[in-house]
Length: 62
Image 1: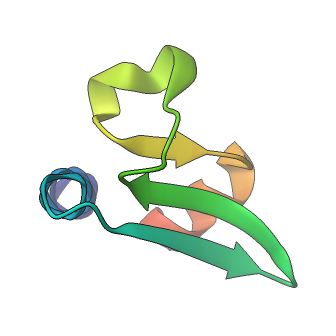
Image 2: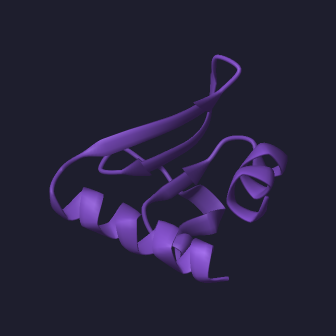
């Protein structure tokens, strides 16, 4: 859970600075954080857009 909290804190800091970071795996974006992120139904995670939940969970938890 600490990794998830750190990820959300980072995303909020990025948004405050108008910065966007895309995390890609095998050439496709799995996560977008910061200013241009569109969180959709996962808005409680702050400015974090999850494009591939399974890949993100492996990235964050693994």
